[in-house]
Amino acid sequence: MLKYFGLVFVVVFFCSCGVDTSSSGNIAPVVVGTNVDLIDPNPINSDGGGDANETPPGNGNPTPDNPGGQPADAISDFDKVDAIYDANACNPATYKLASDASYNGINLGENGSNFFSIKDQGLEIRSEHLEGDPTNSYKTWVTLFYKSFPDSKYLGLQGYTSYLMQGVFYLTYDIAWSDQSIGGIDRTMYMQTTKDTTLEKDAKLTCYRLSLNSVIGTQIDVRKVYRNR
Figure (cartoon, rainbow, N blue to C red):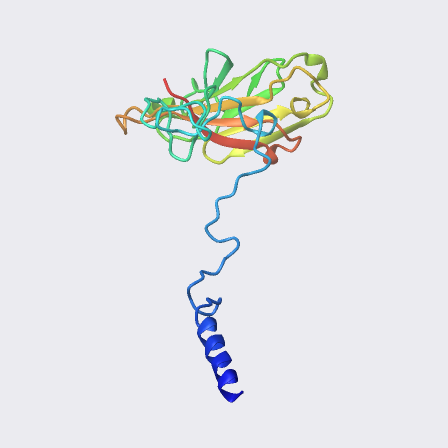
C-alpha cells in the first residue's frame, strides 16, 4: 500500500510541473487602455465639421481607411502640416468669396480698420494679421469662402456671435446661420490666409474649415484642411 501511494505522488508531481500560471512569466498580462487603437463610433459628419469628401492622405490606392485614394505626394498649394484632406477646401469654383486685409493706421488704402460686412449674408470678417510696414499689407489678406444665406428675412432676429483665431482672422456671424430649424443653409465655410512669396519661395496657403454648428461662436468646429491641385 505504501508503494502505491508513493507512485501516485510521483505522477501528480510531474503533471503539475507542466502547467503555466500567470506567475510563471510565460503568459503576458493584458493591459487595458495602453497602446490600443480605437475607432470613433460616432465619426464627425458634414453637420459637425466633417465632410463627405474628406479622406486622409494615402498611397493613391483606395482602401477602407483611404477611400479617396489621395496620394501622399500629390501636389497641393496648401500647407498639409496637421491638416486633413478636404476636396472642397478653399475652392473658389464652388463658393462665394469675401476678403479683408488688416489696417496698420498708415496706409489708408487698406481694408480692415473695421469689420468687412458681407451685405445681406449676416457675415463680417476682419484680418487679424498685423504688419507694421504698409508695403507688407498683401501678407495680411484673409479670404472667406461661403455659400449664400437662403433668405435674409431670418437675419437680425437672434443677434450675432463670433469666432477669433488670434493673429489670423475674426469672423462674426448671425446666429441664424446655426439655427437648425432654418433649412437650405450650407453651414460649412472656409477661411484662407495669403501666401507669403517674399520670405519663403515655396510658402503654402493655409485653409481652415469652419462649421457653424453652434450658436456660440467659440464652440464651432474649426479644422485646418487642404486639397490637391
